Amino acid sequence: MKKAIKALKKEAEAVEKDILFVKAKLEKRQDKRLVKKLSKLNKELEERRNDIANFEKKLLTLPDKVSIVELLHGKTMSRCDLEKKKLYDLMQFMAYHSRERLVEIFRDSYNDHRDIKKVLDMITRKSGLVKLVGQTLMVMLEWIDNRKHRQAAEDLCRKLNQKGIRMAGALNVKLSFHIARIP
Image (cartoon, rainbow, N blue to C red):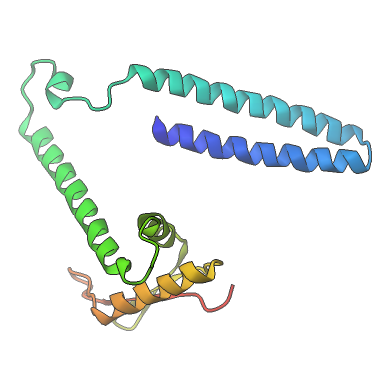
């Protein structure tokens, strides 16, 4: 629900920007098509706001956490379900601790302690290119516009590359991280 609300808010912001753009065009010259488009965008924005309000109202009725015992309603958990839950819990545990370890490594690369996790999330969620070159899996992240963030990302990549990380399993390839040199 929280992710849906966040996505709807981003969509609403995009629609608001479109509305401002259309209004600016209308100030320069009147056009029936722009008036129709503005009307359509206003309706769309209102729909998004209503959806956000409905989701937020629904979210208030839901508990923060749901106990597995409540979900089962007194039934016993099958061995298969129990194994799935254990595996899911293990994946969450590994993901959390992997991220925290990455934060520790990144701390030396970025000075502002208030933004470390936010900037690291921005870097790790950046799209890019993955290519296998010989026995090396190259991970090339897209250009980062902010110079300070880009330098921190390059330093993080350098530190990770110094560790000589290899993938476990049948491939057994070395990972190599880089930031694109040109925008």
